[in-house]
Length: 442
Image 1 (tube, helix red, strand yellow):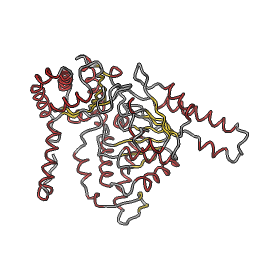
Image 2 (cartoon, helix red, strand yellow; image 1 turned 90 degrees about the vertical axis):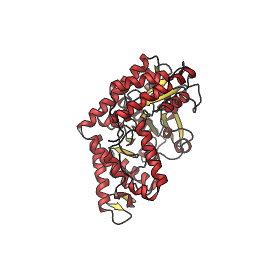
Image 3 (cartoon, one colour; image 1 turned 135 degrees about the vertical axis):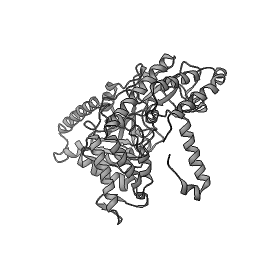
């Protein structure tokens, strides 16, 4: 573990909370799909002297002096991100995935433009148009759901929505979708839509010839992919990369990518990166967190190493193994399994809700999160589902035999309350034994 002797000297109260949180994490099993365990190198880079420097602007074009080293660090992060994801341009400044999405939407759209994104109930992100968020307030948002029977994306629905609603931006990507998304197919649908739209505009005899390019550009549909959850799998070549197909790709760096908490924007188009850079700064952010950018550079370097691909293979294998054994124990898994790092438990035919199961698991040391499932009849604070992910436990080194025990424990929590209470102490001991075998940091 890292040492915090200076904090201990100056602020005992906070030091005790830091230690308490470390002990909590070290003694529990983390199954939240959006969390991971970054390396100590990443943690140390976050606490580096880069924290001291204010650096509004971009490498070579700052609004403050003394940024020569900072420029080198940020450019290093940019170069590594481009190499990792095989793209030409990157902005590593977004403080979060939400900030990255905000910047792209402001760069490509005007208030009132139409955006199409996956609904929250079907596994989409908040920032893809959910009503309480900025995107739901500033834009006209239409959202697509998964198929009611298979719970899979219906690409024919996407096609029909494009022609019906004529969006400025189509967003793909999810936070709770356990299957692979076909970005190539969506690109083909959008290309055909744009082609037909362009032909219609050019055939409009009421338009002046000089106005046609402006109208075509204004009615062009952009394609954005938010790969926050699957970025590590994409980097390892284990999920179809959106880079060749999307106009812009956004991501976080702290999920499967196993880096610091932060955001990332990628594109192969020079004209778009210029718009995006302006939208990030000064559009939605001020000075970048250069210490976090330094940690991102470490994260990208780690992801470029051969062992990172082996790690991601294990993440997927562990998720499949967990899904398989949960089903063996009688728990229904949405879509019947997973292609990535996460799975969704469908609890509609059980005696517990998502909220109840989350609370029971936390009480014995397994951390998860309740999650709505498509067409859920429960409210959003109760839910009929639970989301699990294997990135963090794989980082800690858990093996198949441990995952089998975890699956059995989870299944043992999906029982009447008196039966759960009867087993609770034994399950707590099993969780502590597993956690102790795999320290958070040696």
